[in-house]
Image 1 (cartoon, one colour):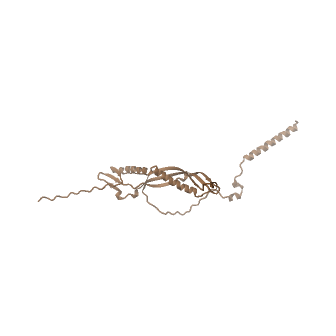
Image 2: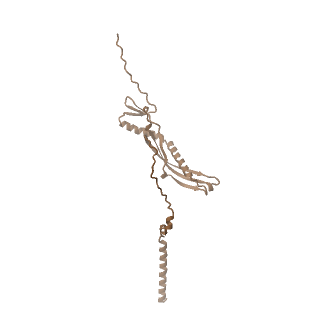
Image 3: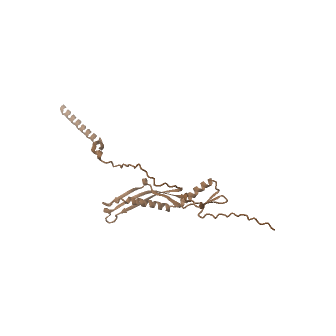
Length: 228
């Protein structure tokens, strides 16, 4: 190969390498953002919702509370909700698997104590008849409750299915807490807390009872008439 041929071959190789490098860089360089494409892209609505709260706030009621919350249960339940199942389920069916996390809080409402529910004996013992334990809160934790899986037919989407599943999950969470003894535990905790608190106030003993003791009558001395 003469000198001119070698020069021509070298130029061809350089040209091929240059074109290949340009193609590689062209592929790797990111395309411009859609916002830079032009004013048309600004007309496309954003997928993120925008919320505008009303400046007006209405307070419907204010209630005075005397609740003593003594125990809290955190419970998880998994349940399946479905509609439209059967031979045509592939068309009208809708099924979801919900993982629900909830909280149940129980205690006693001290505001329901009456005058006849507290008595002090002569030896300094304090008798108390506590109100019945109540479930104050039974709710789902929305940030930890989610749909794990959902299978929907061609025309089977039920917009109320998840709402119904969450409502049932909340009921199941409360039932699970009741079955696990939340009422009994709330009673024990309430008595323990009030005993410590009242004895610190100076009472020698605190007794919780369902039947208040009968007050001991005060005997008065009747003077005996003098003998004639």
